[in-house]
Length: 83
Image 1: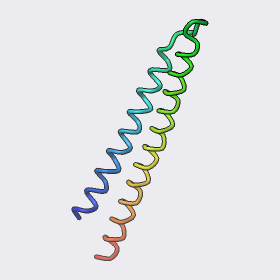
Image 2: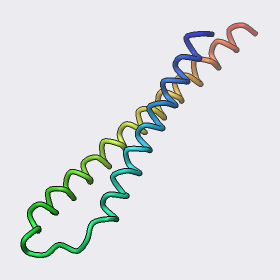
Image 3: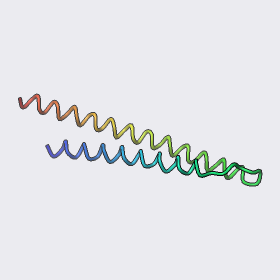
Image 4: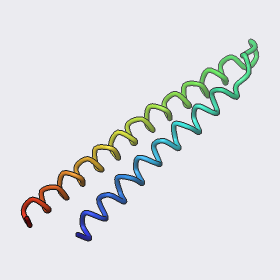
């Protein structure tokens, strides 16, 4: 059972880390002002970086959710085998 507990913890941690990454990136995007011509390139690069971070967070959360699903399936199989 220790293995399954570790899987659940790892999955939950990955999901929460991905969610936090998306939250931070979305706050950074929302905090940006309308660009003026002197800052247009820097603002565009920062916006691009934040959008990339949002996508990375999405993938990280999906991987965590998939890990949770797999741990749940393993636990179900163990319970069915024991019964």
